[in-house]
Amino acid sequence: MKTSSFFQDILIEILNENKRMDKNCAFVRDCFIGGGAISNPRRTYHIEFSFDKNDEKKAEKLAGILTGFGLRPKKIARGAQTVVYLKEADEIADVLKIIKANKSLLALEEMRVEKAIANNINRKVNFETANINKTVDAALSQIEAIKYIAQNTGLSVLSAPLEEVARIRLENEDLSLAEIGEMLNLGKSGVNHRLRKICKIAELQRGAK
Picture 1 (tube, rainbow, N blue to C red):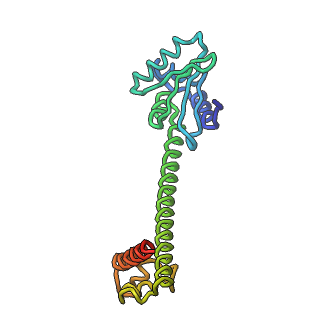
Picture 2 (cartoon, one colour):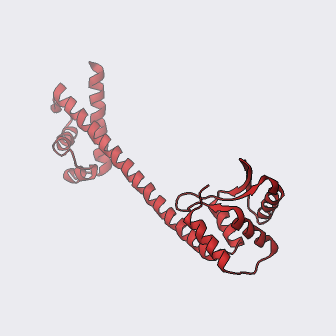
Picture 3 (cartoon, one colour):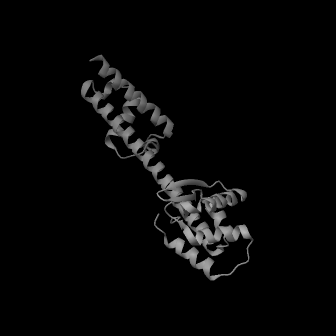
């Protein structure tokens, strides 16, 4: 795993500041300095500690210490190394607390907030885009149904309320249901109900052929 600039920031912080810590915290810190790596939190969450095969007991000890702190480390073999790793953002934050990388912990939390905001915006944009696409598809289906009736039997076969909304829809293809409703002094649901009836009539006419 390639080291990130975030890893370099953590390394500089814990090497330059001589903080008092208990032996377990110091052990985790030393493992991080000797064989640690962490991904850029803006992209993904991953922290790992690599050990040579002859340091298997050291890897076991680290996993035990992290478990003692309430974390859930995983251990895998990678080539000639044993790797202890964590992939949850909260657990990575806890590791930074353990090794007293407080400035880096603050930076991590800021990135997590920014990432959450960006994800939330993307979800909203995707939701709105899906709604727009759904609305456009519905409008196209309505217009197609109205044109079919007009060509097949003429719109005069429709009841007066349905013919009225059909003609407005044909003449104003880009209008929303709410805007059509304003023209008819009718609610959005009322417009939608009439247009659904028109689509059903077109469907019946197609089936009759």
